[in-house]
Length: 66
Image (tube, rainbow, N blue to C red; front, side, top):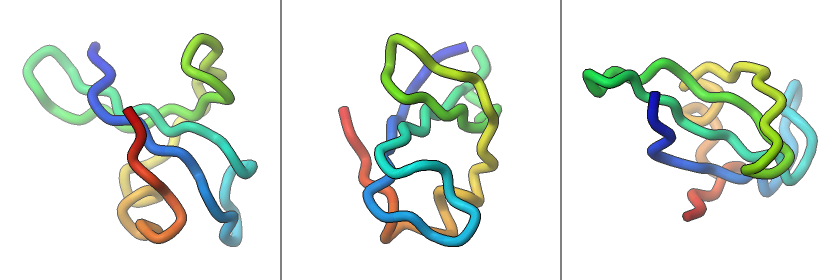
């Protein structure tokens, strides 16, 4: 598995994680997106899953970070 994209929650929405949460996109070796996990910081992910739709349906709330 590889982490390719990282997003940070900039504004809360109904049912969203806590403000400042990171969403880390996981890809399998073949390049297929597995999903996203939530983390407070990159060194301590709590491994709660987010669906890709959680990011895609609320793009105004998430900002891509490096």
